[in-house]
Image (cartoon, rainbow, N blue to C red; front, side, top):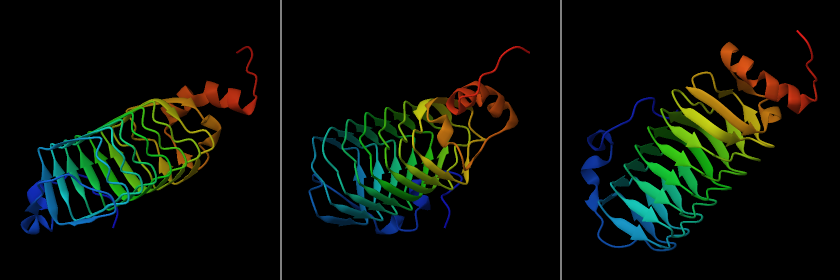
Amino acid sequence: MPPAQTPRGLDDLPYAQYLEPFDGVPERELTYDTLHFDGRGFEDADCGGAGFTECAFTSVSFTGGRCRRARFDDVWFHTVRWVGTDLAETGWTDAEAVAGIFAGVEAHGSVMRRVAFFDCKLDSVDLRAATLREVRFTDCLLRDADFSGASLSGVSFPGSVLEGARFDGARMKEVDLRGAAALGIASGHGSLRGATVGGAQLLDLAPALARELGITVRGG
């Protein structure tokens, strides 16, 4: 099933009636199923290798901490803040993040399948060598996001602003950049093969593409 095109509310989740409140701190290698994490702040939590299935997170903050290799399957996040958290090599499937903040997050090597981000801010997020399949960024701000060496397939950015994005060595297939509100790419223009852009975007990208290809433009 492709990622949602509009954000859902808590009551819209098919497992909402089964959610139970979680009171504690997520720990390493444990499995969490149909739990509601609400209004909590976790500092330096270590939940590496943990599995979260059909869970909801609302108004939760993660500051620092290690969640490396954690798995988020059919998980819904609303107003969740991740600041300086290690999310490297995590797995995300059928997940949805609404009005969230990801700042200084290490997510390199992560795998995302059918994931939707709505009205999120991704600031200095490391997605190097990540795998993104059917991922949608809707009305998001991606500032200094690093997709170097990543594999992107069926990824789109409707209404989103990209500032200083890096795509060095990225591999793209059916990546749709046409709906982006702003397309600020710092490097990796030569890796846009497999992406679709609009005519106006192409004009903006032309000087950088020419430099990448070693083309010299002189005169009129």
